[in-house]
Length: 330
Image (cartoon, rainbow, N blue to C red; front, side):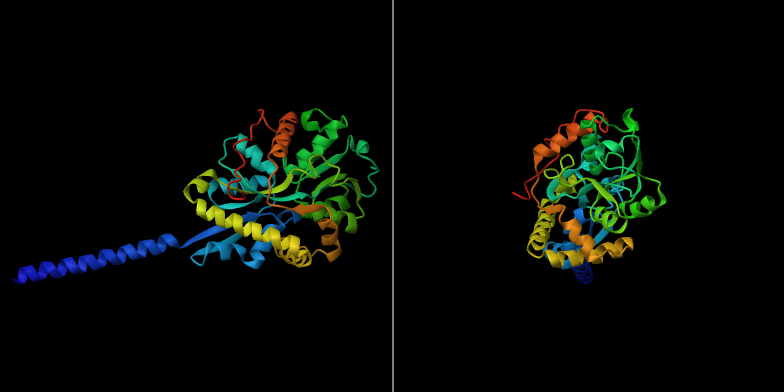
């Protein structure tokens, strides 16, 4: 009799223990952290707005913690996406395409912005037209980045190429926030600058606009930045990706309906992330060169990729038919 009672108590205790373990595991599984990556540029204002307005938290729920990480260039961003340091984020289409052709698991799931790339000459450089850039030193955020491809595509149509492919222009790279100091030191002649840094150079360094945002190759049709995630994440957690895209769409709507509030959010975020305080005039000027949309023009993405190949940034002719996944914005 005592033996039966002992076994019965043991089974009850074991059942309670297993139930407690099961509850704990489920709770731990539900709690997770999602990191969104972006750059402190005007191209990425939707990330700043979604961050400030709490849109990701609203859509993802209280059981998910949202963190944000900024990047100086597309290469470091793509490395973070590949290694799982971030789950999704904002990057120029150039790095996304380049890494996709090398086998990286990346999908463009929404557009972010258009425009925003401006080519400026240093005051005193003697450059008055694009033809004068021949033999000069130009800077872009990274080799093969979106702005780099746009600029070299435009220049090649004029018969001018970089020394990377046997031409006369010298190319260097650096963070856009440092362009003004490089101009003032005379170390570079031309900056291919994303906004708001183009407006900073124009308004605060006396730089001359040589190729405007509406003139440069792919300037008004190519996504200046895109929202990306991995195919694995889409396959394993499509509901989470849908929530991220829905939050992104809310941010786009907010920007287009409340531009002045969006500008204030941008000023605050850029200062916090770069340590550089921009003027309202700079933001106003930058805003004129950019638009915000979650739509993606697949034909322009392919045309841009073809140009990247033509300029030897890509080793093989690209096919981006499987790079873009629009199911979350349709």
